[in-house]
Image 1 (cartoon, helix red, strand yellow):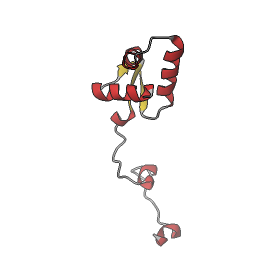
Image 2 (tube, one colour):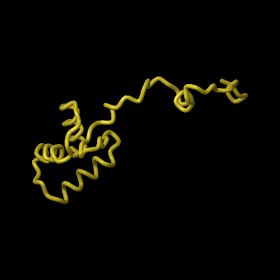
Image 3 (spheres, one colour):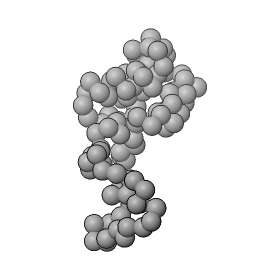
Amino acid sequence: MRASDVAYDILKGKGQPLEVHELLDEVLERLGQDREPRRVAQIYTELNTDIRFQYRGNTEWGLKEWVSHGSSKSTLRERAVPDNEEVEESDEDSWQ
């Protein structure tokens, strides 16, 4: 199992962000690995490149899915146009 998958399971189970050193320690413990600088750096890199994770500041990491981005049913056009602007229909829209 990848370290990032273990980290995801840990955060999902906790339901709240964790300080990065606590998260790394728990990941290493579950993987049965020692806290070697090279391995810690590898895990940290996985967290940084995995889109499921989000740095929350103050050395804490959480899951992106915990952040509300509004209704997931909105269309790209609805998200791209500010609430106070009207969308003008064009000939391109008439084919739909």
